Amino acid sequence: MPERPRVYKTEGVILRRRNIGEADSIFTVFSANEGKFDAIARGVRKARSRMRGHLEPLTRSRMLLAQGRTLDVFTQVETINPYRAIRDDLDRSAVALYCAELIDRFTAVHDQDRPLYAHFLDVLDALETGAPASVTRYFEIHLLDRVGYELQLDACAVCAGRLAPEDTLLSASVGGFTCTGCRPGATGGRIVSLRAMKVLRHIRTATIEEFARLRVDDSLARELEAALGDIVRYVLEQEPRTRKFMDQVASLPPRANQQETGDVVELTPRP
Amino acid sequence: MPEGVAGTPEPIARLIEAFHKLPGIGPKSAQRLAYHVLRAPEQEVANLAVALTDVKQRITLCSTCLNITETNPCSYCQDGRRDRAIICVVEQPLDILALERSGGFRGVYHVLHGVLNPMDGVGPENLHIRELLTRLEDGEVKEVIMATNPSLEGEATAMYIQRLVSPLAVRVTRLARGLPSGADLEYTDDVTLSRALEGRQEL
Image 1: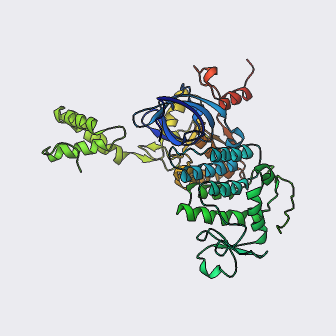
Image 2: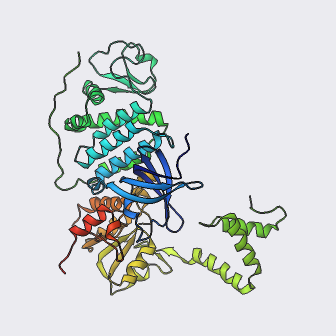
């Protein structure tokens, strides 16, 4: 790793906070040019701290840091986007926290990954501007692609043969869809409907705006969530902690005047 | 394994180890504190020992509001002059002291003992939310004031409880969020500033 300057600037999204001592906190940041890192903010819990509101989790901030002996220290922080609409909405907060946890778990410290950072911002921006919670599926597929767990969605992951247009096994252990012939060799996995298959393939090629316009009904949304949840759990070898919270929030009494968003977009089967 | 040089008498090593477990106390501070206790007058040390055991033996959680208390129910829940139709929900018992110092609240309290923090695995089941809902069941309570901190976790907790309470005929309010006295506009974050603008009042 190249030597970093004593004082450096970066921008990033705050993933999480841990309180230390009387008034300090350690923040985990996913940044554009430093990857994920931990840094300490001194006195940030005092009411008059100048950095306080700029270091809330899920805030995108510009920051100046000084290298410390063990942990780098925040010296100046300024908000770029507070993602207020996400923070003011419990459902969206839960989804964004889930995405933040996946970023935290799938990345290594000081491992720069600008495309992944851009992808994370795209998803936060989409959630901020009212995209449905199903953009999480878009986030998961592209995250898995970036960190080296690209699923084989276009052909059989075992024999590379053509997949019939029918309900198909999606198996994390073989890394994608599995044709009927190869099915006995795959352990675990879940049979996914043809509709869900099409949506998963659409995610690969669509922009996030295109995907956010896609209307996904409740049963399809649940199916996709479960299918990708399996993959994430398999790769992480554990359930993300925020998953349970998302489910708890989803089972709350609905908010007043909650409504579905998105237009109906027809998916054309691929030749 | 007790910290310290080999040959430290066992009672001292044990005391050092006990101090070391306290938050913010490193091995050196633990040693200094232990040797201070050793040199301190007998009576002072006896007082400390009694204070330590008393705090565990005599302090319990109020069965109504879950505040820490010596009497159950606690003094706030017993006080007949307080308005039982308004419950102020706080994260920690220390928050009650702060609100009491302000002198602006005459209702009763409810202590959650924490705040939702999904990233660290703290969910609704780890907080005293169910007890709050039980208190709302008899319909006596007209208003619940959410006085959690204005952080992401505090806001999420407030919204979570608001959604749970929404089917009941109880008004849920949130403490105003804005500029603290002595603040600097220049350094204030956008969310605080826009909330301060929204909550502006006639002079």
